[in-house]
Amino acid sequence: MAGVRRNAPPREDVLAAAMAMIAERGLEKLTMAALGREVGMSSGHLLYYFGSKDELLLETLEWSEGRLGAERGRLLTRTASARERLEAYVDLYVPDGHRDPHWTLWLEVWNRSQNADDSARDRQAAIEGAWHRDLVALLAEGISRGEFRPVDADRYAARLRALLDGFSIHVAIGLRGADRAHILGHVREFIEQTLLADD
Image (cartoon, rainbow, N blue to C red; front, side, top):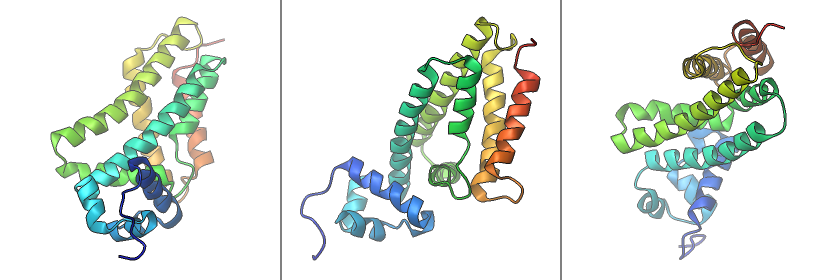
């Protein structure tokens, strides 16, 4: 068949192509046939490769999260105050804007997870868990240094991430009045009121 390779490209190349398609054309344009044309595979071969579109989307999300996790690790281990690193964490968490490709993919995987099996749910929980653990560790460090109030780091992290998720969905779907700068201002105010130690 013209345009289709005999050998499949590396899995990571397929995932990168899927993410690029979401960024350029939107999730609705990411079909197995379109992705197959992009990477030189038939849609049937892609289905054999991944088993289902749900699996393709989850693996693409895991690949994207791996890249974000590496960036988060660099931000959180740099030499800076806990407050500055918390701001960097929030900045990385909140979508860049309407139809942010990572958040578009996240929302789709979340939506599909209603019917997901236990293995897929465990993999999604692992992604969430990495963000949570990093935030708890940063909060605990800030508390120990006297930069943050002595809150329960685990409970505060759960609440802050719930706030970030809610606001991030508003940004990602393009809710009117929910632009990124406005949302970051809300989060900054919440952190100042509930977490920052009194001078």
